[in-house]
Length: 292
Image (cartoon, rainbow, N blue to C red; front, top):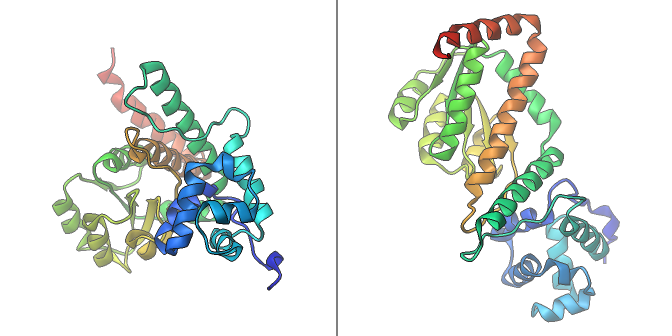
């Protein structure tokens, strides 16, 4: 057997999220192991590799080896230690909990807030600074910014449109996919399209932006970098969130998307310095008459 130390672990991405993301590429035996780990992670950290193989119906320990290697771990020990650290929650950050039909308001509040805090915390580590900086540089030099997003992601796209318009950028936003298709059918040099889609599989986003390339630069904010949107983007900012039943992933992913937009917006504002502060001052003054 080859030396396991040549493999690299995916320490920046939470195990539970990695398992869910890679399920589509797993064999039936690996899927059995995956389901077991997802449903009983605390039990798994106390099990030997042979116990896990037996409990999941795997033919041999080698099936478990192939499973943790698929996740990027060099050894079973590394896999268990990382899993144990994750489910421990790291101080006050708690693991995700689904909301059940029997939960009262206090429990729902705790689960939603704790899940949101954990998700935001995990994204701090998972988001790549070099990727964010590349997006900042592209946006900073843009002649026109187009913000595309629908449904819950549309609210984030609209928030981004509002923020960057106030900074002095020429921005476009519409919740109508037909209007966006028309706007993107005539791209110009210097156009930047910022697409927000958790799944990355929305046809009304992917098809129009394909027509806008290569003149327009595409920045994607998505939970799936290997999606259609992620693959055609010039810069793909990949976020992390978990899927639940009542508390759907749209709730948490929207919070992460907003945090990413705010990060890009603030970083560009800092780079532009006093010039942008003056524009923001004028923007606030232009809205002052709307308040008592």
